[in-house]
Length: 117
Length: 117
DNA sequence: CTCTGATACAACCATTTGATTGTACGATAG
DNA sequence: CTATCGTACAATCAAATGGTTGTATCAGAG
Image (cartoon, rainbow over all chains, first blue to last red; front, side, top):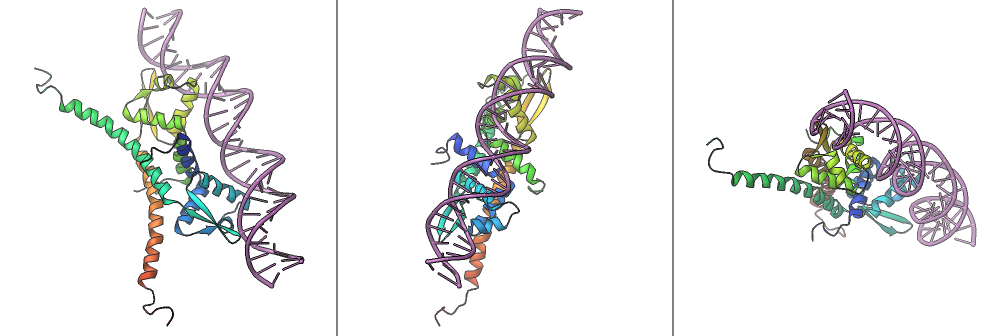
């Protein structure tokens, strides 16, 4: 079970969520420790609601999870999802490498006699 | 020279560019071989101009480069940029690991005497 | 030289995004 | 119980996105 389970939409959401500095910062913070939404909101200049929305985007991308604790919602970064994103990028490497492999095959199966025979 | 040279905006552009299925497909194709913009356009249902814009987004993110060849513009995937993105994701892993390290330190330096002494 | 193919770019439009404020509601501290 | 804190959610708005068509340019085929 690699990354195959991810739909195109899922992948879109993951990278979209990562494409914002504030959200990346939230992700970093919540990877280090559990933080409530209001604690997060205190860290930025924008409104509480704005931070809440950023968290929602991260949550939809499954990059963080929320857990009720008393009246607070603790946000926790989901490392496994980040690893999935890494595997997605690995795929590009593989595609690129496959192209080289093909070239290798051409070279390996090339006429043993020099071209100017 | 790691990923430090990248501004927040640069990172935004990279992940934003990756957050679209068509653009990821273009990236895959251009990693395998050089393709002209019109060849790419033939591969999708959308208009030429739309594909052209997608290529432009990838180009601004430096995920592809364009090279004039006759009247065509050959598009080439930039693997190095993808590796930079991978390193960006590695950073999240590192942040997470640092948190564990801190926990290790706490455990390692914990009071040798049991808490209920 | 002229026609055509490949690209670039502007103008336009619908939808989404990122932010705001305001309202409502559940959980907790006093 | 009541006041307040933390959250959720709706409405609103400007700006960015993703797409379109139309026009202009430029290089190569005939």
